[in-house]
Image (cartoon, rainbow, N blue to C red; front, side, top):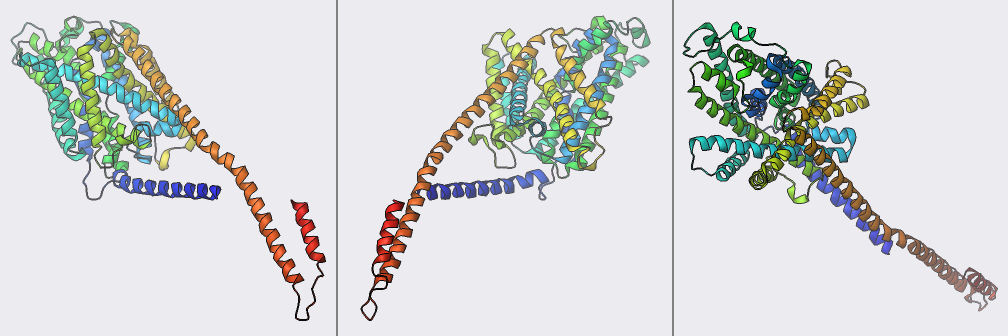
Length: 543
């Protein structure tokens, strides 16, 4: 009886599990295949979302670090970075078109290397990006305090994080329109700088002392740092390209990922590389490398040199909008990453989102950014920079994992996914991309302040790998304890069934013997009692 109860309980659990799975699939279906009632993100909105994430403070301000390291040869670094981004996005596009999963590269990592790898990559990316965005909120607060000196830094940073989080709750379609506006403003600022630079070189509207044009380039060494300078600048160059992975995370918000994603990727690459190279060439025609300082945007320094000091205020406005745009798109990706982790059971059950917009993932990510901001206020600056610089490691680590997952799945599949053309030059292009990313990660200590980021990033990888290993071990022990009682019951249960079967056989045989020995109408016994006695002897032997 006890075994029957356990069997029925197992059946009941299976039925409930199937019902839950069916319900989850019904809820996820509109999200994965595109809701017919919703328009979804267009190619232009998706491109602007990617550019909104990519073009940020790392380009307008951080590019000075790359220029100081490599000089004019930083142009070569931007070309190399563009080729790497193209390879990574091509690999991501191939996997996304075959399976437009909300978890994007985290899901593909899990398919290629197992649940432990998916857990680790997802949490390393989420944690690194949360810390990086909390530092971006601090940067915006410092810029705002230049205009409003009485504004407390903590209040300004908290207000920005709350605003960015609430705007993400509006949904992908409305956020896409807002992000398109902010991204267009940033791109127009870069285009405006290029136009002003051309005007200055042509001799229009300048009041400064600088001699613009080829004369500026002639006085400079094209490779002042040699190969080491280009290698040292690659880290910052890749940071200026960072954020394009949001294209994969946004795939589930599009109606037709197979068409939309590849087009958005091509446009993103073309616009990014063209604008970056044009802006850098214009910059070198105006500003010698010796006048580039890490604390000031090189674009502000170049325009101030030619009597356009008022542009500093304009560039600060552009910088604020650029960082806000980056934060908006990053929180979009953070919410989807957390939803993917929750749906795979890598978070507590209460974190799971059933709505089309991942409200819980967005709110939890916003709360984590507030905690990161508080951490920056409480901890010494050196410790906080150690943690924040891990955001750069998290992004580069994710790009390496994208290439490694694509390589593994492509080998397993035996060819391009879904018959499409796929990554050009595979597998050589995969090896080149992975080798280059490992080299860039290894060069992090060459940039002041980034050695700690490498150490922090490796620490996060080890910590999350350990958390998963401990959780898997605990689950294994718990399932072992659950199975143990059922093994103990099986033997007595089987013995009880055998004894019940023997008792039923004996009773049945006893009834036959009684019927056989019952007197017939003539008063005689059928078997004269012999069979009955024999039956008793057989029963005794069985016992």
